[in-house]
Length: 98
Image (tube, rainbow, N blue to C red; front, side, top):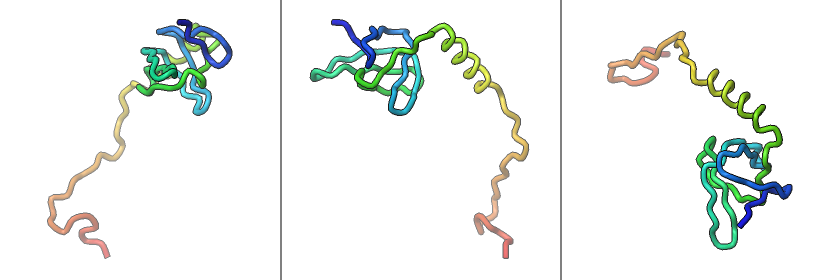
């Protein structure tokens, strides 16, 4: 059985696709056929989407590079400017306020 996107292009595992309703993009990690519907699971959200609303991203090489770059920037460590201090006072939040 050939799994096709909204434009008639073949969908396969490890292919970059986009869910057209929310513009969620990701890598296909699973394909499920259930009750005459085809569902595509994306690695970026962990959710299944109907293949009727999936579009194969044309230039997968460029997408993969930008995806890796974007995720590399997000995975960096962040310094906390003002760390939270938890009060041990029994009056709770707003203690001493007026």
